[in-house]
Length: 235
Length: 336
Image: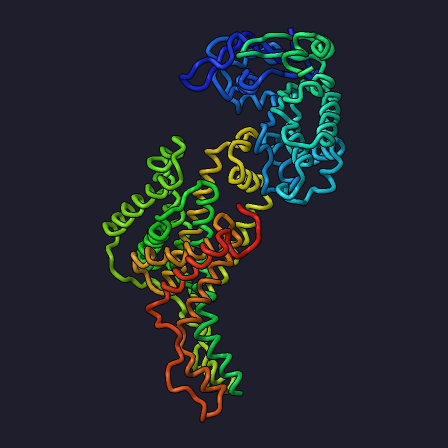
């Protein structure tokens, strides 16, 4: 049994059709799992269902063996699940340090130590700590977004297209940062469009098609699977 | 000597009154900007909410006077501020629970909430009419002047007198204290930061574990404090006419927009911009020039750019000009 798992999840928005059906995703601590698939495959939806942003019609979500299917997003965050949305994932009008402070809103203890740890992980943030985030570059903002999400010391980190809209160089840098986060024993789930690069740093990957698990396997297996290559990697 | 007289004249009739009036507008404008920034609608009940809070101060002042409580040289009304604030916050939270929260949960567009606030305005006006009536009331007691014109003349030997009213000093002093505490709260405390975060990006604030209900509650509490204190200071300085507050909404909104709506520090400065503009443009400068110019050049007219009846036209013109040319406000600065 994995640390964080979504089992046979079926869900949709409101009364609309099911976007994901019987979709299962699991991840262990210190592991990166990529969710891939064509547009409209339900990648983000699967992740939002695990966060509780939409209700499951069937299936369950467990963390560390505990069923949290009925928990609100707020209560799931308290269980140590952190989420970085694809867009608007920073407080643009607050300074870097304030962004981190807000990320630690649920922490009662002294947050200065955690902030120092985040600065160690993302040195650029220390340099820019008093700057308003709206003035930072795209790559720096993504680091702020990651930093904010890490402030609660999550056991699970979910990233919705962390490299959307950044240049290839920044993308490589971000992936390096994500690998560093992995080393702190966090379970990471990410939805990615840049499938090849994502798989190259992932331990495992899931390919979703029309809301169902189509393929799954280690990063290498998926990269070398001829059908996956043809359909999703464009090679 | 003539120059000193001219400066004293301006100080007495324009600068001091403008600083006082500006402080009163500033408190109202910060109220507007906070509600706009955090609850995301233009609150047209602002003026009447200020009046509502002041009404309790007036009633309590009369009650305190009747049982013989006074505040020495200071106005008794100052003692009533905590009670008036309490009643005001209670009223605001009640309105929020039964009216605004319904539209907030439904995620209604801001214009709908603004229209709802017009409804709240009418209801508030009606309640005020029922409780205290529409009449003009004075509730200022204690020492009226800190410095009288005759005393000033004796002291300095100048022909121009300077009057400092206690309400002027109280208004400026209390405004600075209240606004400083509020900025400290917004910028330096955890709760204040969470409010700014909520205002900036509501969804991400939720994902960070910020409780929106608490943010809304604290916003109304701060708004209640600002509205009541602003209203009482204005009432002490002029007199309490319940429906004058409604008219004051124009300069208050103008101040909030000049400062960049959603930016509390801008709103604070905006209050003074509007007040100085209104007073400088409607003051009759005849005597001022009489001091400065040789007798031959003395103006015959009043040298008044606009009649004081047009002071709202000045706020309105500034409002329109800012919206046309600098819609994000004339001051740089962080939004709430």
